[in-house]
Length: 305
Length: 212
Image 1 (cartoon, rainbow over the protein chains, first blue to last red):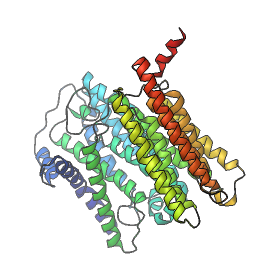
Image 2 (cartoon, rainbow over the protein chains, first blue to last red):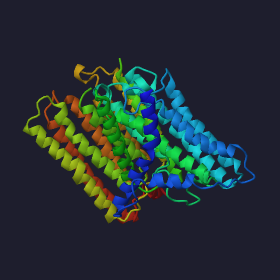
Image 3 (cartoon, one colour):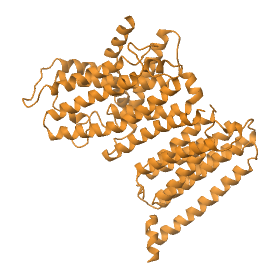
């Protein structure tokens, strides 16, 4: 019970901080001092304090989008062990649920975008779903590789695997999987090589265009949900990428939080040194991610007797 | 797992970077980084690397990682060639072909009768995959400079394969390969220069016009 409470507390409180760290890293690269680390929290509070305007053409689905965008990542977070060795919820095959909770939230975000009747938002929805079908295989190939190495099909015990051991026996495929997952992380959270979360330039937006008609608390929920999504996918990546397991729960929680900070800084660095790729090059990058994770799996299958 | 395997995975990643890069500069840098990574490998594979192994690694790193890519970058700047790579086969298909080749290399290497110490490692599959990627670049790219990069990657594959023989044969093989490469790059540089002088372009497609 205490485990669950701490887990929820971390998942609810920590994610916007990552956005703050990313913002600060980018500001440091640009030679500015940048917004406060707590700025994303202020933004959320401001949005939740606003009233909302609903278009009369929309139906209930319009509000289901933001609700799912917040609830689905939260539910998915329950399947991933953060700092502790065990996740609050785990059963055999929960990795499928993990992947499709995000797909569910994406479906409702796209449906809410279509519900507004704006052709512009429809275009964004089309882009989002077509890119996500390229990101999904990359995620799954990686999950399969990790499942095969750890010999388990539930995320909790997959990620509780002593990865220092996994890196010694099959580090080659893990490098490929981690590289593939990092690309997926950037794509799924619409970070820079794929989408720029700061601009609202109509022709290039992918994710942002779908939520143009949401405002106030609904937009707040969407932003909050997307920061949780970044946190959860990042947790999945860092649990595999960092081969340090500490026996002491506090120490391992500390290691985990340090890892997440490192990831946020890394994302900030990538956003500072790279430009957004052209829209036609996005599938190419995602196909590369698929190939990397797929090769990781193949290497494993090839090396196993 | 062999310690060299992690570096060999980097080599494979560089193959994909070179195949997927749409700019010439990225392509050249991928080949340079691959060469630099490769030159460390003999130290890891050899049981007791002596001073000649060290000198060999330093020489290979200087040649593959700095000198040849530097020459290529200089050539790119000198001949004022556009930086876009215009491939005959698109980037996504060439990535897929590269992945297919790598998969085949993995499967094929599993069936080869290798010496017992090389059975579990990535040396042979990585070398075959690198050979294939280099061949792919060499055949499917239009610009002559990228074709030279393809040749460079092809040769990197040969270098990796040479690691299998590192115990049986002296470093003479490797030195020979490196010298061959340097001579080949010089010849290619001269050829590139001549092509440019005759046709004021490095687009090999225009060479087909000679026939008419």
